[in-house]
Length: 122
Image (cartoon, helix red, strand yellow):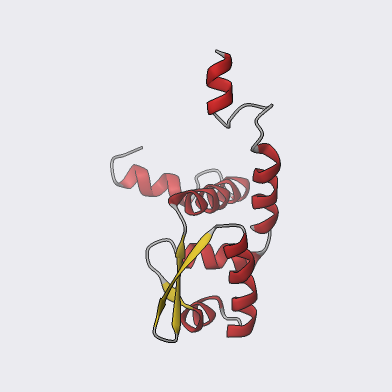
């Protein structure tokens, strides 16, 4: 049983708790959440992200630098252009779940539940 606790980070005594809090703090910004949502299905340049989130490229670059430092996003360079993507699927899930929780706070039947019901999934 103790061996399971050392390999799984989802226990209260996990050494990952403090790092998880830092990730939550990094995502506690609407522009960064919007960036993560924009990067869910594709990699994008700074200018394209700036258009999507309606911020200046300079501001988006600063947010991306912080997300990169937190290892939430990764980059690929093509000539002089840099493209950003999510480093893994977990940031997307984390942000999606936060959006779903927000929907629950505002309505009895959140949109994500109606979508599943319409698909025959829920």
